Image: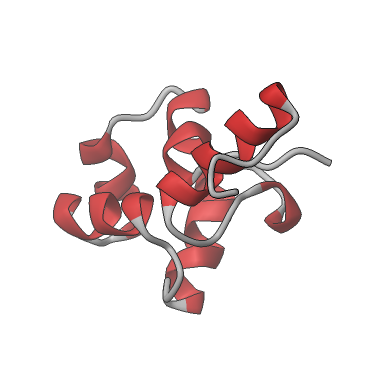
Length: 83
């Protein structure tokens, strides 16, 4: 199964940062923070966002968003830029 970022999950549901923040009871800054790096996302927030975005847990990438983008680029080119 492919993985998407938290931001992609939100956008795919047609939600703005503001609406996602309101629905989750968190601030816009908090949602934005975990969209950039969800390595340490609190479990309660993760569960709330999974429900709001209506995505399964194994579909969303947890980590630094740029790492996910790098992985995607590697799969397109067939090689690692770090080599």
